[in-house]
Amino acid sequence: MIPEDSRFETDPDALVGELVDELPALPAGWEVGQPDPADRFDLARLTQLLRAHERDGRGWAGASVDDVLVEVSEAGLRTRENVVVRDDAGVIRAWGSVHDRAGGRMLLLHVVERGLADGVARACSDLLVEWAVGQARAVGAARGLEVQQIDTGTYSGDERQTAWLAASGFTKVRTWWQMSRPVTPDERDLVPSADDWEGRGVRFRLVRRAGDGMPDEGDLREVHDVLEEAFRDHFNSWEETFEEFLHRLREDPGHRWDHWWLAELVDDGDRPDGAGAEPVGALVGTVSESASGPDGSYVSYIGVREAARGRGVAKGLLRTIIADAAGRGRDRVGLEVDADSSTGADGLYTSMGWTTSYVTESWHRDVTVAD
Image 1 (cartoon, one colour):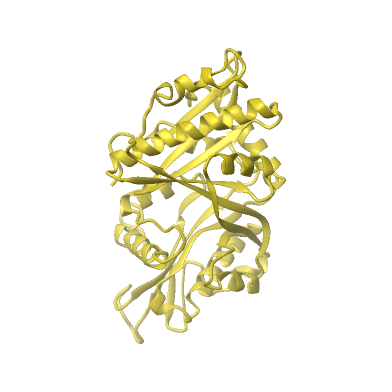
Image 2 (image 1 turned 180 degrees about the vertical axis):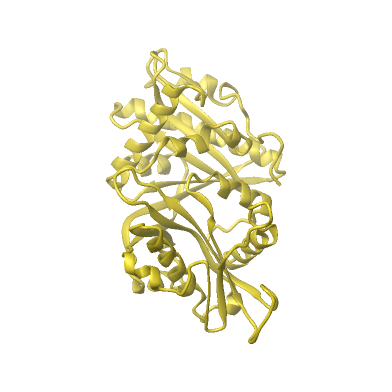
C-alpha cells in the first residue's frame, strides 16, 4: 500500500547536519537543505544539474523539468525525499533523491555538479551517501526490515561516479544495455491493428476503458499480476503491491493509459469480449518526448508468463508497440535489457532491429537498519 505519510526522515540536518562541519574540503558557508518545488530557480537549477550529469555520462541530455518534478513535487513526496547542498550564495551544487520503491529496495539519485574541484565534489558526494544511508535506516525501520538495500546507478565509463560509489561501500552488481530501434511510417502495418489483433492463438489488445474513460481496474491488475510473475526470478526483483506499481508508473512524465497492452491466450470460435481468454503477457509503454524532433515510444515493461514462452507473445507485443509508434508518427522505440541475463531477450531485440545506444550500471549497498 502507498503510505499516507512519507516513511523518510524529512529533516536533512537530523541525518547529516553535523557532517557539514566535519568535511574539511567543503567550503565555509555551504549547507544542506531541501529543494523548493515552488521555486522556479530551484527547479531550473536541478534540471540543469541533471542534464549536465546525463550529458557527461552518456553524451547527450534528455531530462526536463517534468522529470525533476517527479522527484521533488508535493505529489511525489509520499514515496520520495530530497536533499541539496548549497554554496554560500545559495546555489545548488549537489542533489540527492531517494525513492521508497518497494519493500527492501530504495532507489538513490546522486548528482554532483560537474566542474567542482575534486575535493569539494567528493565531499558533496559523501554527504549525499551518508544522507541516503540514514534514509535507508528510516524507511527500513518503517517497513519493519533488518536490512535495506540502496540501489543506485551510473553510466558505464563514468570514472568519477564509479570511484565515489566504490569508496562509499557500493558494489557493481549489473550492467544494462539501453537500446533503441528506428521506426518507419510503413511499420504501422506490422500488425492489423495496434489496438486489438490476434495471431497464433494469442490476442493482443489495449487495456479496456471503463465507462468513465479510465482504464478497467481488472485489466490493470492483470498487467500487474503478469509482470510480477514474469519477473519473479529476474535479477533484483522485489514484490511490489498493485497500489505501489500503479502509483509509481503514473508518476512517469511519459505515462499514457493507451500505451498499456495485454496478451491473452484465446479459445477458438466466437466468444464474448474477453471470455475464455487467459492473460499471459503484458507491455507497458510510455512516450519519450523530444524538443528537437519526433517523439519516441519506450518499453517500460514487457513480461511473459513462463508457461506461455515460446509462442511468440513477446515478439507480438513488440510488433504492436512498433506499429503503434509508427501510427503516431514517432521515429523510434527504446527499451532496457539486462546485459547479464541468461533469458536470451537481447537476442530477440537484436533480431528485431534494436541496437545499444549506451550502457548503464547498477550499484548496490545493503544497510543494516538497526545500529
